[in-house]
Image (tube, rainbow, N blue to C red; front, side, top):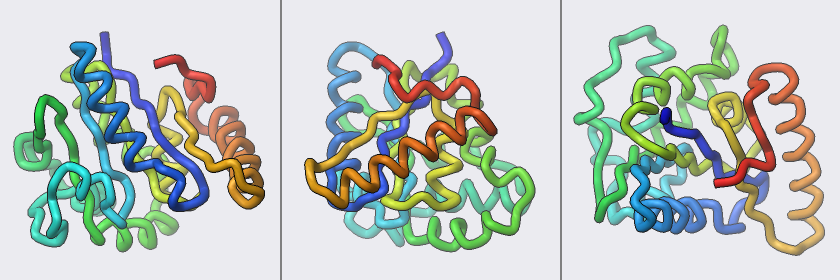
Amino acid sequence: MRGKVIIVGATKGGVGKSVSTYNLAYSLASMGKRVLAVDFDSQANLTTCFGIEDTAAVPVTIGHLMMAQIENEAMPDASEYVQSRNGVDFIPSSMVLSAVDAKLRLEMGAEKMLANILEPLKDRYDYLIVDTCPALGALTINALAAADGVVITVNPQLLAMVGLQEFLKTIKKIKSRINPKLDPAYDV
């Protein structure tokens, strides 16, 4: 079985995306699944959850991999960027991802770059879980374009509900225009 890409997303910050990603990764691993967690947010909260405090000191992050895609450079070996903690593998993030977000707007085929990074890793894992940033920008579109399913975290507050409606509209557009395999009701 090829690994399934599940993104954890919301358009509002502080709704538990990173913690949900972390807990889902460890829950699946405790069930005997091979799991890769990907921190796809320049705030690097998931990376911090995995115990890395100085994200700027990480030599190869998801931001570096995305920059390599933009520049058409060769990808490093997975051993250079996949880290492991207590049975869960992860790809860390850093502020480098902020520069990527700005560059993606000018790139052809930009929405497929994360999918290109994850594709060769799918044979190694049952699940690839991607923590996204709290915005509907180029990075979130990239994550949705790579996804098989979506877990949406939301607080029961008015502004979070408004954001949820916009996020659901975006998922529907991505499914019809870019990624027909995207299932917003995906069952892990």
